[in-house]
Length: 113
Image (cartoon, rainbow, N blue to C red; front, side):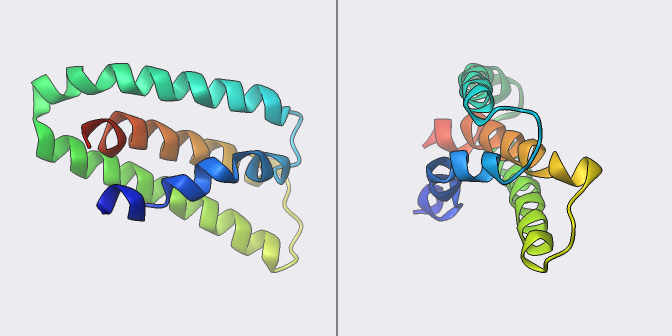
């Protein structure tokens, strides 16, 4: 139940829409491929983390990283919704947040369940 309630499916289903809302020079198609590579890399890191730290710390770290990523996405869309002009670093906030969410999901709760 927990792996379904963390919100990863919503991020994955709306990935293209989130990337298009960033208004950066990064093409959404290229970013999707890069995110897929990050997902595969994170899945290969999971066994290394498990043998060194154990299940509980890996799960807690995974959920903490996902929290930070979701917080970044929430902040970006709240600022966008309020009508303020998003410029500079804030345009890259959703991309960084997506990388965090996808990496920590794939390296933790996504692979362990």
